[in-house]
Image (cartoon, one colour):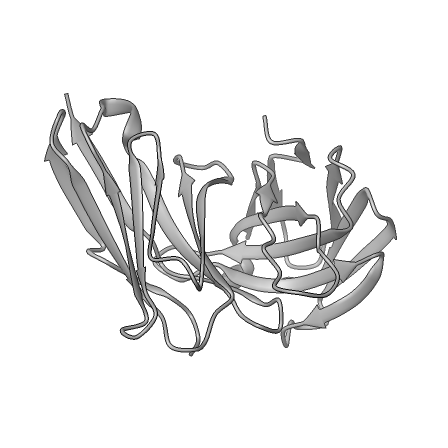
Length: 110
Length: 117
């Protein structure tokens, strides 16, 4: 399977703490993207990192990409209760195909 | 709102019914997608339309029939479904670039929660 796999499957933290989620994939990619999904809703794009980039920031989000290990991490700093959601990584390969993982369910406790 | 709408939001149907899911995007994108999301499974890409032409059909059973009349509208026609087809069906759109390294960002609709009895 070329699908990404997120780790951990579920994460529960206190408000104000940092949350780190990891994603591993199996094939060469053009880019890797992180999406967020609130319960019962569609996915919302958070951040994209290209295969030639190693780190990217957007507000409280920090994404890293290690193409040699075929892995990425998403760090959410100073978490808030409103960050409670499922987070998915998606890889886009050279054939423009998208592959999503199973997601990490994040709960931020107020 | 992401600019992608889906109707209906919830649908309950029997195995012998015929129904259709509708998706509309207001973003001027040239590609549209149907995904199936089941509990504890990765998001499954079902169909891709690029400039109204179907470019991918990931071994989806024929009881699911897509239709893309124009670049803004996408339908998923359903007939003789099975209970295991119960899931959240998500529509997405993106602007596909031609040539070079593609960096599509997908914009998702809110989904249709389908229950097959």
